[in-house]
Amino acid sequence: MCEDVGFVVYEWDRSNLTDQARAVVNQAVNQARDCGVSSVSIDGHADRSGAAAYNVGLSERRARAVRDELVRLGVPASAISLQALGESRPAVQTPDGVREPLNRRAEVLVDLR
Image (tube, rainbow, N blue to C red; front, top):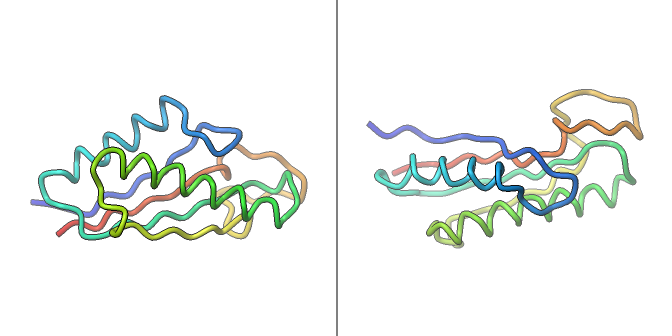
């Protein structure tokens, strides 16, 4: 039986994926491959260590990096939607200006057929 796959990609200071992050994306795609991907939504996030406007752009670059890896692994680009949330939905609440690795992430939901 196929179930939707959700995962979170961490492990970066910028918007490029580390080997560990690539492994997470690859594992999710492998899980989904037999069922077929209906759609994928990616929410990019940032911590509060930079300016809010910069963090929105950074969260978009993070989401795009995950999208690019999904496409490289065979997920159709037309099935993927992105949302850049910047610092608006932190995993861990922090004061402004605080660096928090858990807030530097892309959350991905793969809807299967």
